Structure formats: structure tokens, C-alpha cells
Length: 394
Image (tube, rainbow, N blue to C red; front, side, top):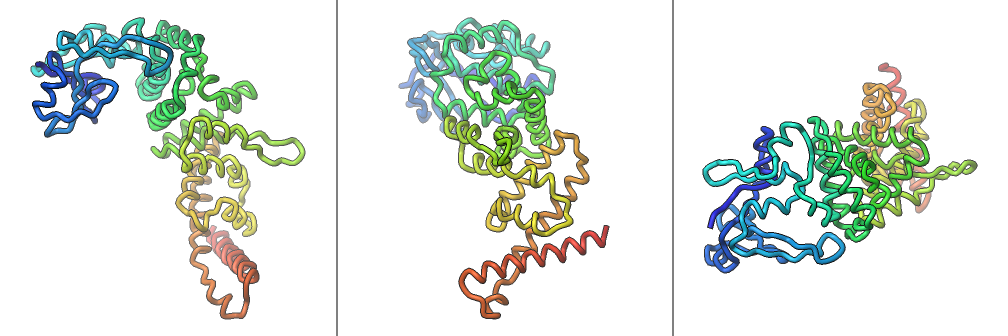
């Protein structure tokens, strides 16, 4: 029995990046032996175990054989005679197919270290094209490492396109697509997830609504990706980043100017996107331009924005909305100091509205719906007083 540190921990160590999680492969053992040694099995599809003390994951060395369409159609062999080289051969990219033994010696049978040096994302073997999830994984690694100069090898892009052409991506569960998408949204340069999927013609399969932006207008698509990039510079929150990406999705009718959120709804429903992401994206799509049009000179538009966004009840979400708006406006090269001043002023006005004491309305004898009318008038007066003070200070 011999253990090896594998995958991302080895890769990140060679790149000089912090190692967050460590995964191990065990060669020459069996499920029975692992259990006898006190490891706890957690994997169902193949034997993965938690170390009795560190709780790190240890997987038996394995090989896989394709048995049908989709991501999970594989048979797994964990024979104790399987070598570390055979285990590494089944991995997606060469930079993820390296191992380190207990003496610190690097095992790199497929050129991962050289590809790290040359900043190339390259598949390990032709078996790459057996798993459609790898299309999304490569796109995610592009989002993670593009800022360091990494690019996808052309021959790997060709295999990714082969998976698209064979309709393999259609077999991926929506939950897995969203899982990779959300992880990509959290990477340093998430726009490269979208761009890489476009490069292999996969974007139209997994996110046709986003792909449609490129068909409607290259400028809309460029601004959407730039908004996503600016959001990534402002925050690590994936809901804000998702909202910035989607802000151009609504279709505006020529005469009524009513925004149609059909595309956003379809995207969220198909990928089972969580409600917090969907809700924030919805108000961003509907009201980012109302935010952009505010001049801090009139109380009514400000209070109306608060009401439409349910800001009085959900101030934290409204603050996220303001960050998404900032990313969108920065994508259009608006002055950051002006955006920040507006957002700070809106948050202050919101806080003052929340602090309005409704008891004086009740004491004045108002009842039922009149209370709401008078409360709104009081909030308008509060905002007006604040704006007068704000403009006077300027």
C-alpha cells in the first residue's frame, strides 16, 4: 500500500499558489484494508475514503471504461495492481495529472509540468472525449488561470467540440452544469468560462440565452462580459457576478418599454439556479437602468426604486443590487467616483426611510390604507430633506 498526493494540490504547489485541499490516491490496497485501517467510505460510484484523523479524501487507484452516453456512464476498476500512472491517465488535463510520493518526488508521466511552464490547458489522453463534463471543467480552469496567461490547446478544443457535435452535453444533468457554472463564476476571470464554451460551440447548448446575446449584438455581448469582469473585480459573490452577466438578457418591447424576462426565467429554470441568484438577477435586469438614470435631485424616483426593489424589507439584497449596477456602469466606462457617491447616497436615504417612525401617523388618527399613504409621504419628505442637505453640502 502506497499513498500519493495528486491533482490540484500538486499543480498549485508547482505554481506557487496556496494549497487549499489535498486529495490522495492509494495504490495497492482494497476496500477491506481501508476499512480495517479506520478509513470511512464516502463514495458510492467508486471507493473514496476519509482519513480517520485528517478527514482528507483518499481514493483507491482506479481505471474507468465508458459504458454509454453521459457523465456517469462508466464502469470502475479498483484492482490493487493498478499503478499510479494508470490512475493519472484517466484525468482530464495534464496539469491535473501529476502526483507526489511520500518522499516528495514528482510523478509526471504526461507532461503536466511542461504544460504548466508553457501555460497550456491540454487533455491527457483521447479518453478525454468520453466525459462531457470535461468541456465545462476545461472552461472553468480557463476562468481560473486565464489571468496568468493560460490558454486551451487547439487539440483539446477539438475534442471538446467533438463532444458537442455528438450531443454528449445534452446528457449532463442541469445540477452539474450549474455546479460548474457557479464555480466558474467564483474564479478570477469568469468571462473566460463563457468565451471558452463559445470557442468549442458549447455555449449555445448549455446556456443558449447567453449565446443569444452574441447573435443579437456583439456590443451587447461585449458589455455583458465586461460587466461580469468588473463584478469579479468588485466582489467574490457569485449572485452579483451572475446578475451582472445577465443584465442585457431582457427583451424590451418597442412601444411599451416593458422588459420581458423570458430568457432569464428560462435560463434559471432549466439550470435550477438558486432563488437568491435568480431574484437578484431579476431586479438587476429590471431596474439597473432606473438606477443609472437617477440624478439625486428628486425624491419620487428614489423612493419608487426602493419600492420596486423591495429595498425597505430587503436592504442587503438592495446593496448587492447596487454593486451589480456599479459593475454594469463601470463596463460602460462611467466614472467610478460618481457611481460610488450615488450608491452611498442611496444607502443613506434607504436607512433614513427605514428609521421613519410610523407611530406619529397612527397617533394622528389615520387608519387602514391611509396609514400606508401617509407613511409614503413621510418617507418622501425624509428623502427630500436628505437630498436638500446633500446638494447644499456639495
